[in-house]
Length: 409
Image 1 (cartoon, one colour):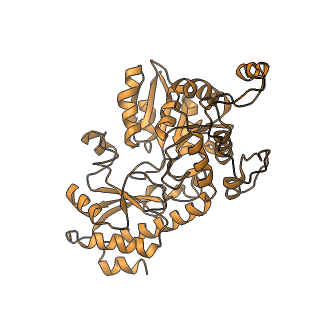
Image 2: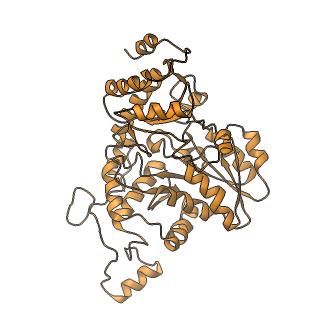
Image 3: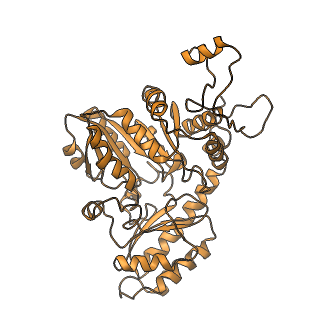
């Protein structure tokens, strides 16, 4: 398999095997089962002595190429694809944890990941503690003799806190535990956690990897000794597989990932500057801003700040609702990584599985709004934000509107 110096080449060519018909693009093997030329071949494939497809729940040539490409992009031995991002999260944790084990997770997590950790895993005898991973003393204090895994997102959904992977991995190795990082917001083009010693990295491939809002999928990447039980045990037996058609769509989407991420980052940076200067915005959470605590990790851990940001409005729950409802170009929908700019209100939507107390501990206020900045022209994006902010009550703080507009000219 050819090795490529640049990831912008790998997203197009990585892991591709030319089929016997000479197809330029990856063929879609839309088949549940595969034919053996003879019984001996079938036995050899089932026994592991011979490579080759058997049944799509066990592997499919189209999905195999997607897995090879993501492994190359993340610098992993292997990748395993799943039917959703949560399929990837649950498979990773179920591979590494069993009854009696303990998990330390970050306080800020995607709402369904939080529900998995706090509601589902305890039913299996797996307990967890959630702490702020920016405080390594708190992380260490939360660890017990039964702790097996540290789980985190960085940047964090939805308030974009950034955690130092080198420091977290050093702590984990000292304590003899594994680390799992959700890298969805960054993609392998902006951050590669395995390079920092992380054990497993996962993505909701629904988002930037696909990029077109028409697939639900997940990916886990890591070294072979961890991936083998994940692939041959948890995925095989629990059955959270990715369909070959969805794998084919993600392969198609990956070809433009480098170009898309560049535009997402540029647009988000312009939006962050505009909002930071606006009098009706109390705070902007975006690692690209020098005011963000995680900005120091740009260049060392991340090569870009991504396309997602959050803002705290100068107001309350109703203020946030009014702002979101007034947006016209931004589409009110969960998810991110699409060509379209999306907006959502975490307290009432993605993070509603959290209790009010848990949301407060995670820094998810009622006035927090998350923007997934899309690929539209930046002037149209800023104009939409301006008109929605103009109608909010004037709280008399921050910059003047003339100063805010001046920041974007």
